[in-house]
Image (cartoon, rainbow, N blue to C red; front, top):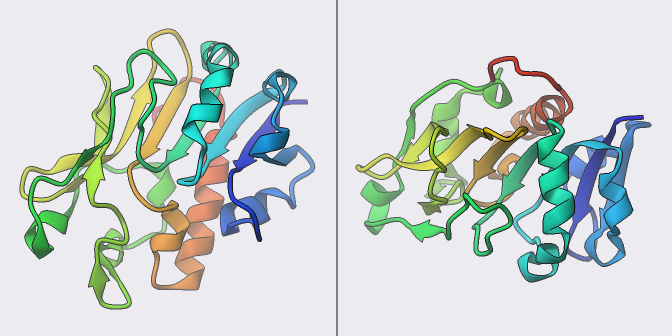
Length: 204
């Protein structure tokens, strides 16, 4: 069976995406201390949270590369601070402070945002910045999806890796938690799961 691997890196209740994933018979929701190399063997989809222990996750770079090589899809929440894949670079905070530096721009469509009015993601409870305050630099060939600040730095991007697999990077809080409306949160969570579990070379 092709499985959905969800790595929970914090204690307490799983987030909404992992709650929905746990309802699927093909999903494995596992706490990071219990993660083993064998969990990657059948995985075709991977979701990690902003709480990922990146130092610990470096122990699985070989398994991660093999997962990507065979066409796996990975949704990454948070700030990249370790080179899990050779092409990845460290997170860069927004160049400007204030509302101007946190302004979001829709740069390209993506199925993860199907059914979402992306303008509503600009603020939560009247406060800007929940969505993200910087970006993970894009590998060569990646496509920017959401920009931040006047420079439209790529806060969200998707990358079809030349050696195989796809990575969606969201350089902020766990994406469904950035919504004001609970129904939007559930839709985003469902869309993330659907995307990582859709294999093949189709366009995003």
